[in-house]
Length: 322
Image (tube, rainbow, N blue to C red; front, side, top):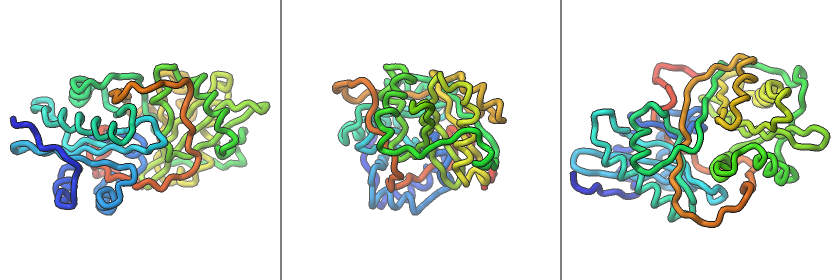
């Protein structure tokens, strides 16, 4: 196979992107579980005309074409692959997929990203493709799922506050205490997630990042070991703060370094849904500083990507989330 022609997409590539995205694999759980995953053409168009943090590339060779998209905000240390479409089947040559992964890595580096991330099912063929592309597994995570539920704030035993600038230092200290040092660069939530904090005796013991969309709610908790006894209540109170929870499924991401949280969320009816490997490819060594970057506490207006209908997360066209 000749070397693929790899480049950023243009208006003329729209039909190809729309067609291929329906056979792609979502590699960003937060977006795949919350946004419209069934052909948001307006988002596709805005991706091309108004990039604002979204980068889409296409690779073409012989009779094969592959599209890849990643997002990157200058406030973040890392870029995150949104999807690859289509992903190679077990018996297919995945050379062109390797080319699109390499192209996305280079493009992310040009914009200042220190690493490129993807959330991949460890038992998939794509996992092996990513390993061949020199992505390494840094941690595992399990996405837990619950049907829509209603929890009233007045029935909650714990009080949470919206994360604000005054909490920044305490949040950074909390994450440094929770997340293993080698993962700290990659574990910080995306800058466009919102957050809630829990304080006890003026000590911040939990930061819970969350995102919501038409298809679901995504929660990424950071809870100190000293608040283990409050973990279930912290999750329930978070859900009580999100009115959309009564209409759409709720997903909680539990990473291996906080595996003890699984028992707490299982107690309130969550079920394990899918296991993923957080895979990382370093782009530039740079200078590593201890701790975390500033967590964005506002709601970003970054353009939302068009997410393929066929996901690494098991979403089918027949499933109704509303």
